[in-house]
Each structure stands twice: as C-alpha cells, then as structure tokens.
Length: 101
Image 1: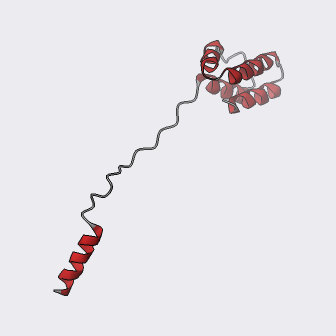
Image 2: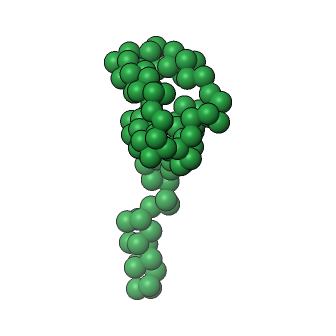
C-alpha cells in the first residue's frame, strides 16, 4: 500500500509528460558561402587572379541591394586586388576581403 501511495505521488508530481508542448527545432543550417567568397578563398590559397574566372559584378549588385556601404568597400578592395602582381600580396588581400564577407 505504501508503494502505491508513493507511486501515486510521483505520478501526480511528474504528470503524464504532456508538458508545455514545446518542440525542439533543428538548428538553422549556415547559409552557403557566396560564390564571391569561395573564389576569393581560392585566390587566397593560390595567389593567382588569372584562373579565378568570376565576374564579381553580379555579386556586387546583390551586396549593393542589401548593404550599399559594404558593397562600396568590397568594390574598392577588389579594384586594389586586381592591381596587385605579387602572389603573396594577392593572397593577403584576397584573404582580407573574403574574411569581410
């Protein structure tokens, strides 16, 4: 009889587990990196601009629509990157630009 009373108290205290009805949501996956960032990371590894094969104007247009100040800075940085000839300088500049995206 004691065990029944103890079980009854435990059941009344804990309830049937219906709870507050909260559900666990899966964490939002990180958005895929922009093509511009992927290309810049590739340039940062190779130090070569010639094989990048990307026209950054489309990506810049997207940035201009959402963040004009950031787009202006990226555009300025890309112009500086294109003028570089030393692979070490190219790597450093591409890495710097990519980290800001």
